[in-house]
Image 1 (tube, rainbow, N blue to C red):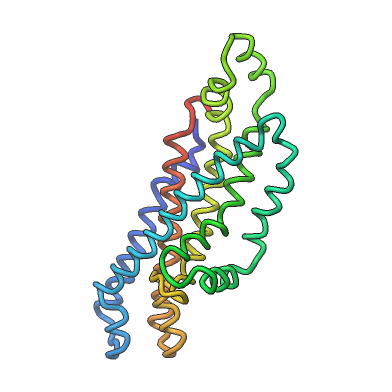
Image 2: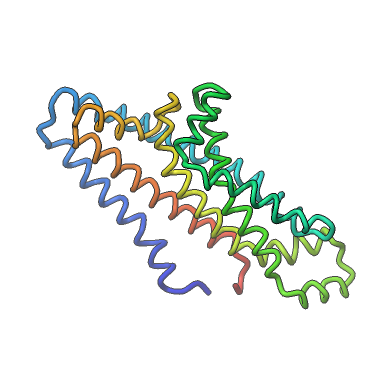
Length: 243
């Protein structure tokens, strides 16, 4: 059974996001904005930028999971485990490098646009999912694995029915961390013409319009909280009963 605090977050977090967003919407509707601010914070523009930010985050998150989880499983298998250190070290390079530097370097190599930003985000966020997959699988009780072998289960069945279900909470913790990293780093997409809410932040800085700057930062923060909530919901859904 999940702690009451977790259930409180599952219920309270979206309510907080909705209340804060409603407060911002009321301010946007009643504030005396100049022409530049009105154009930048137009409802259609904000919806479009938010959608671009969400698409960047979701596509990158799916790629991170598709790359990191199978790779983490592979690195816990006998005979391949010795490669864990070097592979994790390479994955760590993506996160150790400054995110804006990684984005710019990849843009110079691959060109500007959506696909380059997705590649950059995937490289940047793969480490926590990879590391947690390895940690979760290696943390499964060896006694349970021996018992499964004693019951005649194949290696594939042991992985799918014993190891992965027990490692899911740890893996999902890594996925949630990756999601937060992706939402924040996606703000740099504006620098390579890949869209996203970072455009509001960049516009606010360049034009000294703090209402635009703060609005962009607030919307990114609210989106990060909402994405974290989605991660918590997914964790509750996929967590095996009894854990």
